[in-house]
Length: 466
Image (cartoon, rainbow, N blue to C red; front, side):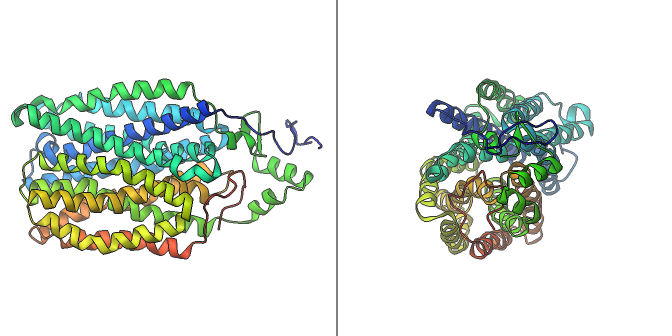
């Protein structure tokens, strides 16, 4: 096997297999789980705070209905920065590896969340309070933009091909753990403290306390080895990806048909399919995990403890749902499972939201748990492995992150705002939420039907799956 004559490159055309032990796989899994848990704990802490107290703390000058809309808009601001962070960090990740990027994303994301806990309120500093909140939400989103995508890419590139679904589902379990932990903290605060104390200073505790998880996650990632698939890429030499010109020359010399074909093959269908798979799940997530909590608390006038408690119960059920869906995706194929889960979600939207609208606590729990596990957690379990599998090796991190975040800024960032305004305009009707969830879910279903099967493909292949 000849060496490359590309200037500055002296490596075989086919790199040796990167060996990873079971301990390395476990460390990668824990790293992905922790980072994603922190990301979703950060966002769930904010979404619950926005639904429960932030409208009073940072938007006190507005009427109650408009204050909720502004609090949700500030939630959406975090998603504005995510595509920018995704583009910046993920491009670096495709050039020099995933490990370094994932260290810095979690540092930025965690630091911004911790600082929210030290912010002054509107009563203390006036308009400066929401401005500072928006700035920290932007920083939080900038770091988070490449976090869950990087975790999904890293785990997909570590896992055996026939176990990728269940192993990568740990990323979705991280989202569940973060949501559960944030909701548990809020439920505990509301249970042991007077509401006036929570509003005055208790809301700061979960934000400041998140620093503990950030520090542990940083320690785990500092000791993490690089993705084996990244090191096995034919265009990676000495830990850095070759430029396009260098790659063309190397592929031509070694008759690397896959690489040459990938240069002429644009991932248009792969991008469209991935976008709408993400769009469906992200839209449902924003409505169910963010807006419905506000709807239950404010529109239905339920006790403030109900919202966090239903999220806790549903998230506990998710510890069964997420790995089960991941396992079934490995067994029957992710495309087939997307079709099944999306169709089931469409059937359940109206009955589950009608159960929530009864204002009966038991039926709220039942309705929320069903729609949350099917429409949000079940789809998230497959999404975290599906999108990295669909894209080719050279730009996997960049395309995965950009698709995820652009879809999220449209669906999750805007969805809760539209829902809040629409419900307000229809005097508390839950029908707008049904319509929006139907649109999001149908998008994922249509994308899955259009796509060919992508499960278990060779992740060193630079070509997209479709």
